[in-house]
Every structure is written in C-alpha cells, then in structure tokens.
Length: 87
Image (cartoon, rainbow, N blue to C red; front, side, top):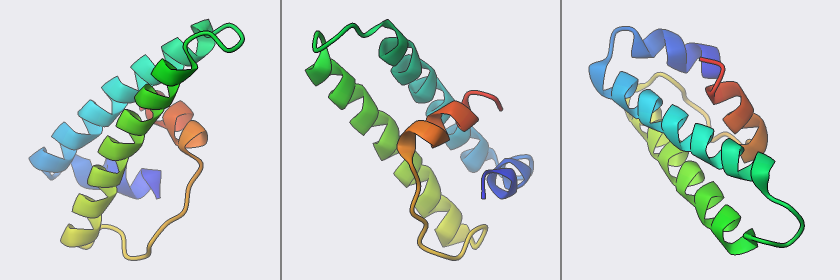
C-alpha cells in the first residue's frame, strides 16, 4: 500500500503535500516515543499519536477518492510511522 501511495505522489502534488505532512508528524511522534520514560508524558504521547493517525487517515481518504487505493485498510499506526519516516 505504501509503495502505491509513494508512486502516486510523484504525479499528484496534493498527495505529495499530504505525504510530506504525514512524514513530519511521524517524525515528531517517533522522536517523542523514543524519549518517553515510564508513564511521564503519556497524555502528550497519545495526542501526538492521534495527530499522526489523523493526518494519515486524511492521506488514505484522499488516495481512496482518487482511486489510488481501493479497500478499507487496517493498519498498525506504529508500523506505519516507522515506514513513513523512511521515505
């Protein structure tokens, strides 16, 4: 799925913008996740995770509306965050 989105973003400026935004959110989320110690900052972590999930869901909705992907997808947001920052 992610490879399809990356390929489509090369020809679609709006998708490219959404992808870049998702990457920024993923980087912030993963950085905070690495720095978290114990229960400190759990609320902030949940907020960052929700923000990243929100932008990724927006990206998926855009891809569905353009026909780049067809199915409703289930995904692990932590795995997606790791993959997104590799782009």
